[in-house]
Image: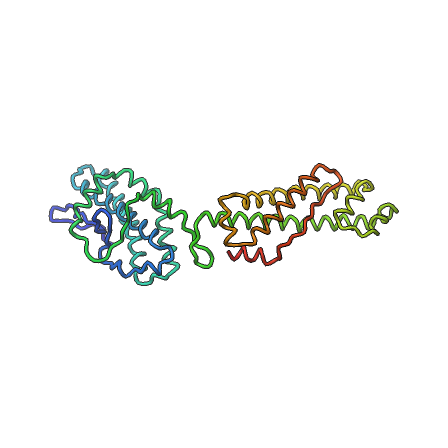
Length: 331
């Protein structure tokens, strides 16, 4: 790959990789008009950000190039050459992906590659934007203002750093639907807490059954009389508490601690659902209201019984059927 062309005086001929008129860019040798934004899953945001990054990289390499011919010190000149090569490689990498996308705009791999290229050069380009300043950009505009023709990428009026903040909110879901970062954060947090609460509940069942097995093998009349009444677990353990032996009390205490863990997860779920900024999601999944009512009731029961030493289980009938979690995962 040849990065530099030289004139008769062995000076580097400085060239731009793009055409820029202050707002739009056009890539040399690429018909950007072939890139149909309607088929581009990230829409215009990523393409605009890529164009802005190209503009800054190209402006800086051109700026360095115009300076290099007047530098006599070989060490300084070599250092500038390395910087120019580095920025040309970065810019050409972005250009090549955009060129490929213009031929295959639906390619998920290419679209992901473009976004990753921008993200990998994020800080470099932000620093360039601060270092270059408006004077160089205006100079670049004058240099290329007469060269724009045909299709181009409109990079808009916001700064590159502002574009990156906007791009941070662009997230691709598993079914290739764009969702904003707020929605992703809400659903991911809700799903995580639901899964952890459920998994902890399942673990508690194991220890609950272990305690019940100990009690069933405990032949004391007081224990067996209570078991024979066929109480539900909450009521049975409440009635049995005063008769528990040392081993049974340890198991009881452990079950109680697990209830405390479940409470933490349920509290997180409740807080998420109660937040007024998240009420919009109730419209997307109406059964979130049922979930809210369930955890609200569970937490009310917990608060009423948490100081009772003979209570280790907090059960509240869940009125939401199993497919709810599947629906949430799908969302």
